[in-house]
Amino acid sequence: MVIFDKIGHMISDESWEELHQFAHKIGLKREWFQEKEDLSHYDLTTQRMKVRAVHFGARLVTPREIVKALNKLKTPA
Image 1 (cartoon, helix red, strand yellow):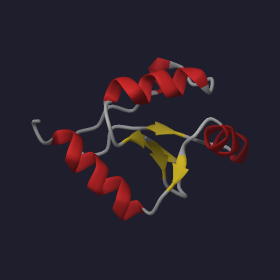
Image 2: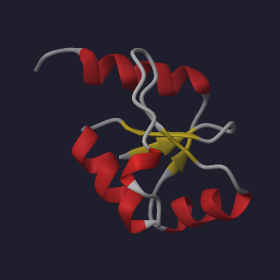
Image 3: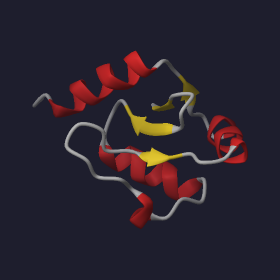
């Protein structure tokens, strides 16, 4: 599932591929992906983008849930 926090950090709790596909679906460009060691994500910079993300199935979560999901992605299956 794709999730984002109130700041607008959007990630997937399943896979990076899911995140990139979702971002494309809502109109974000791949080059806007912010690849960082601890918080790789897309930014939802406007309220309109947040509403669009929710419309397509993303869920608003707490920052703590974002961190938990990122840690899950780092853990080898």
